[in-house]
Length: 119
Image (tube, rainbow, N blue to C red; front, side, top):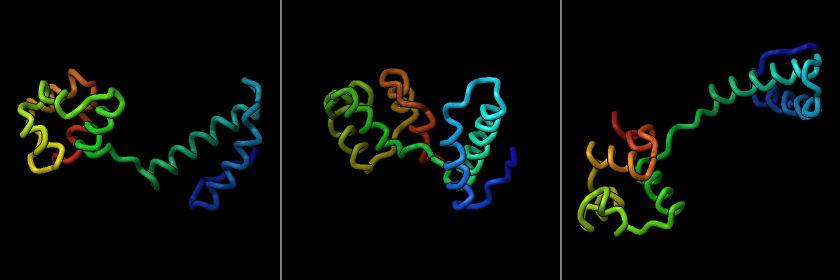
């Protein structure tokens, strides 16, 4: 087993190719150990070089609406009047703390997503 750090995207592609050859490794073998190490290296490289930030709060709300088949009218229970819902969805008004708490509790949108724009 000769494992090297992943320093660039070429190294990443080589590591992926090696990992493909190890996917069927039986647990407890040297190949399975190598596979585990390679996965850890790949995750570390990708987290450092290709971080995934939480979605924009409005996009998170729209995504949840699509998932659950909700309309803007359905959001009134969580956000307020139809005018306020429209302002929020059109980015003309920020989410209040009360709205964020309610959207999290009732629609299970992660706080991390709802607070992504807050500095």
